[in-house]
Amino acid sequence: MNASARIAGVGVALPVDSMTQEELWDTFFSDRYNGNRLAQRVWTRCGVERRYGVIDPVAASALGTGERMRLFVEHGVPLGKRALVECLDAAELEPADVGHLVVVSCTGYATPGLDVLLAGELGLSESVERLHVGHMGCYAAVPSIVAAADAVAARGKVALVLCVELTSLHAQPGDEELPQIVAHALFADAAAAVALVPAGAGLEVLDVEVATDPAGAHMMTWDITDQGFRMGLSPEVPNVVAQHVRPAVDRLLGRHGIAVGEVGHWVVHPGGPRILDAVAEGLELDATELDASRAVLHDYGNCSSATVLLVLDRVLRERDVQDGAHAVLMAFGPGLTLYAALLRQRTT
Image 1 (spheres, rainbow, N blue to C red):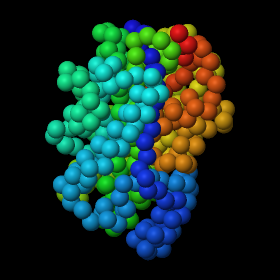
Image 2 (image 1 turned 30 degrees about the horizontal axis):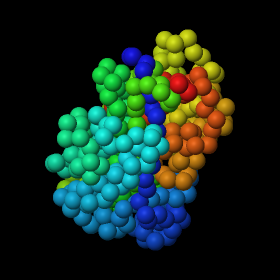
Image 3 (image 1 turned 180 degrees about the horizontal axis):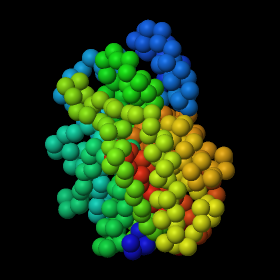
Image 4 (image 1 turned 135 degrees about the vertical axis):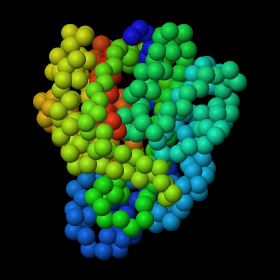
């Protein structure tokens, strides 16, 4: 990959309404699960303290898929616009500078899509190139950034990548199966965006590595039903991640002569506490090296593809990312798939 594309800014937007995990349990889910001790145990041990949402789960669970998609557009456009405006400001860019827009979501569909609607809302050029990435799940931000980086590197475009995920729209009717308990306990709403530029300061996109385990494809699913999208999630997912994370990272870093211990910053999707434990153990990381990921999970929950960008935003705001420092951006999702990108900080 041509290494000239740099992440020059990040923008984050959250819904106005939020509740603590305890409030969500007491208000909505305690009665739904009717004393189910497994549900309460999952709820209290999933590492989440607060979540943001565009709709309360009781209201969402009564809706058909069509109405959920209407609400996706109603809430997704303004939320996505806020993230993009913040991203442009952080990167010191104007809408007229943008030549390529990528919009990512696995939680809603519309035609014209959010890419068209947001291009109009932002006043982007009528000739802006657009790409919609749908239904890839939690890892989608990484391949989307890599695809945008290729456009930036090859043709000198300025690109925006936006992830808009409204998981609250897909709360399911009363269901005590473990995958639904986990989904109801973990997932939340957010939008996050990055700007990529062909030169200047920022995180240079150096390389990418993918590991997909088709034998585990059944372990994580996201099915479209008449009552929204329904998650299937096996408790074996962290074990599969643990199996693949070290070989994949070694391949990625090895091409650049870098050891795991030389990576300055780990930007890892917090799919859940056990996922982060599997990554830390597989890579033999110090307990503090995934603090940003755990903090995002604690403060916002799992916001699907937007989550790893929330972690990136936190790392850039709270840590001293020095010139030449390497970072690994990593996320996981259906497939079972691990995607990792190698980044390097550049001050010029």
